[in-house]
Length: 287
Image (cartoon, rainbow, N blue to C red; front, side, top):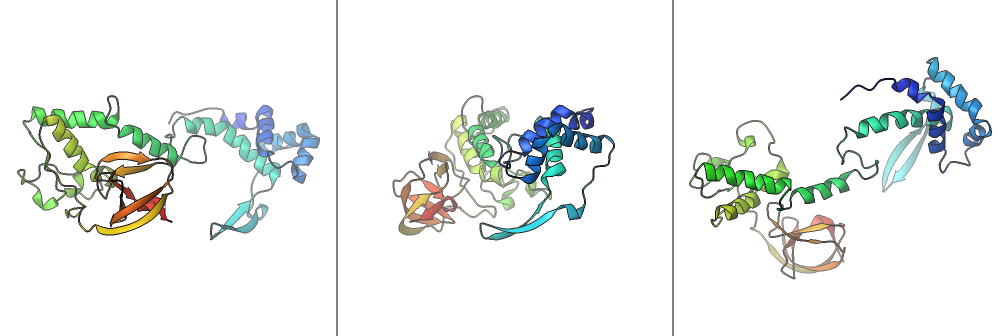
């Protein structure tokens, strides 16, 4: 990370302190301390500036007010500092360091920042995994296809079975985790191996004999149970897949949070009556 100089002097700059007070006082105009600072901001902010300049500002444990709240059934203990001078100083610091951190944070680092968090991450994944020119997923498929063509590999074979290492007539794909104490390539990409193999084989002009499997090599499509009930989708965007697991290709998406009929279950996945495919029941609720 590039070094940024003169941060401290910028924190206690009077214009920065005034901006910090404007941000900190939002929705708190009834606070006695806010009214106090508003009555003579130059004086009270000047006092904060003196504290920071001569390094006399400090925080003690007794400065906090401790309270317990119930947050969705869970008790949480909150430690809160008084508005003056602490909340203003917190804002003064953040006004200077947040722009610096934002230049190095990934877009999905923290959901408390605008346009960041897990929703942005899910959107990025959906974009990356589109098999369209210019996307990372498309580039990955093209790269693997090129490697196969240059090495005379006519078909990728994947069973997810470590015991088949070296038996290239049955399985010619391996993963790092089988040779070292690693999680590489990670469960998400690992579960995509059947789909990657199938897509590459299409590019190679062959018919894939790849079978989507679980980590231990057993077929992921076994054990479906016939059912018949309605669910309401709870996710804003829910992928529909060819089979019951993330190792199967995406055939579509549900975006309306609507009600759908499930006619089969397998490992936490439900088959849609329409025949469109399977959805994760973690993102659906029975009605």
